[in-house]
Image 1 (cartoon, helix red, strand yellow):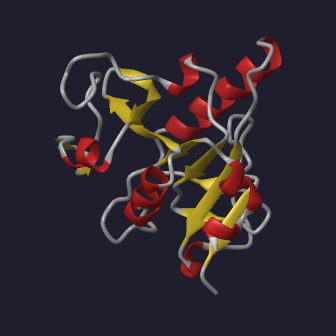
Image 2 (cartoon, rainbow, N blue to C red):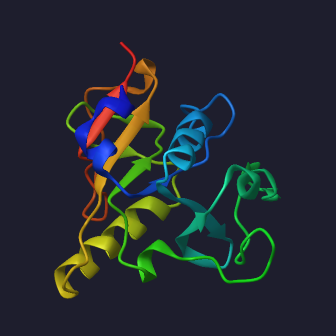
Length: 173
């Protein structure tokens, strides 16, 4: 379904989360598809000392496979440098942003409200994208798509002023 969406087809720079086993929609087939089709792919890097995640570019499937597993979340995470350690990875926020970002969540509403994992990484990152899109010419806010299992879709969620509403939710019925 995702691959048929016009915004996905047209996107050149895509951010996507790397899924936690069984708890989230598996994004590895999406990552592989994007890399095989020449899209620039950016994945999150979390740091315990920094409340703002980075979305760093990975250039190939081999680059993904060589990424170390972050022990706290048990997901792969890019190092600050590329796979052969020769250059610093490209950070999406510092290089004109993204066209589209796939956003994880514990729960979603059909109207785009999202309950994350409680650290606020994506909300902070998307709020910074919004700020940059309002202050820097040619910097645009990405389309946001949440991927969910049907049991993650609920009617209502509590929100606050920092929560970012997602543009579109895709889930199996």
